[in-house]
Length: 118
Image (tube, rainbow, N blue to C red; front, side, top):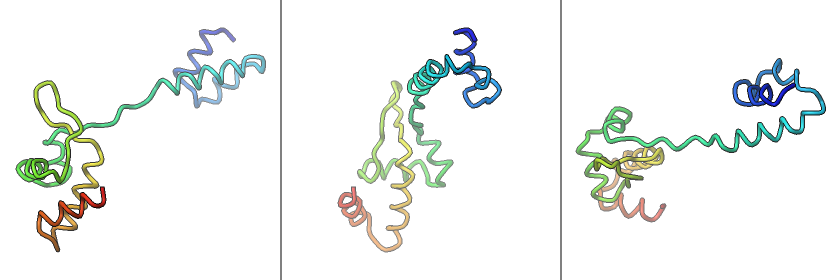
C-alpha cells in the first residue's frame, strides 16, 4: 500500500475496517503512528457563546446576563475584536447554580456562595 493510500486511510476513514484491513502487516506500525499524529493535531477548540446564544439556550434576558456579568457572578472567557463578550461552556453550570440559589438567597449572598465554591 502506498504512502498516499495510508494518508487517505488516516485522514478519511480511520474507523473504516475495509481501509485498515488493506494495510499490510509490514506497514501497521507506520500507519498507527501516522493516525496517532493526525489525531493529536485535530484538537477541537472550545465553543464560545455570544450573549444572544446564552439568551436562546437559557431563557434569561440579555439584561440579566449583562447584570450577572457586571456583578461578577459569571465571567466572560474572551472578547471579540468588535467588543462582544464571549462565554465558555462553564457559564451554563454557573447560571444553573445561580437559578437554584435565587430561590433562597439574595444576590450578594449568591456571590459569596459562588466565590466560596469557585
